[in-house]
View 1 (cartoon, rainbow over the protein chains, first blue to last red):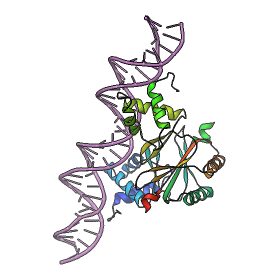
View 2 (cartoon, chains in turn orange, red, cyan, brown):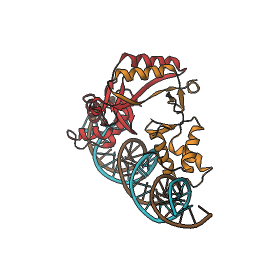
View 3 (tube, rainbow over the protein chains, first blue to last red):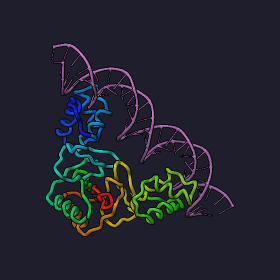
Length: 126
Length: 126
DNA sequence: TTGCTAATAGTAATCGTTACTATTATTATA
DNA sequence: TATAATAATAGTAACGATTACTATTAGCAA
């Protein structure tokens, strides 16, 4: 399940994701890494993003039928602007409160949760 | 933007979705409708599901990279069992409370929101 | 009825993602 | 340090969900 060997590519992918806050999709990570690693393969990016998400090093979520990735693993939710597509992080204690409340409410084991709020951001509303 | 003419197909699609609670994907709606409407096209199902979601007659959300549709437009969230894949509706006043709280917290116009909680349902936990 | 044209059926094309395979690179061991 | 075992990669092909295209059908106003 977990990676057994180090690879330069996986480290670069994790570092790239930790160093940006635009919630990229796999292709955006690929294009970004190609500048420093011209031969990296798109398949390698996908495989490692999947591995990193599986072991909790990064977070994956879906917006508009497309997978996005987030290097910030502190629990938070995302605000998506329907106009410009920008994805903003929302950190607030009420998010954690709500999640634990749901966890208690459901008679189920909760492994994870993610919320996406849609709307118009300040810039697009003007 | 909105449909300008009635169509038997659109009505059947909406009725089908309102009459089930298994949060089907487009293909499931298509297979179901083929029994009563053998010539209906998958493209027609997709187009109308998109139209109906756009004008708020139904709700669309994504689970595992696949679009699902819900005929129940009362605000609620979804619990997805990682084992069996079942999607349960969760109605609770705290959901509405949380959404309105988020709406105030963000300095943004909120058009909609959706939360997916993952875990193991009662049946699969045993 | 008739005419206009939105909506459809059927199919082709697209796009994001995964699978496959020969090659490369990491790591344990001598 | 050299060697062997094999995990991970690069490059490409395949796949599945969704959208686009086009000739035909059907809803609706006159």
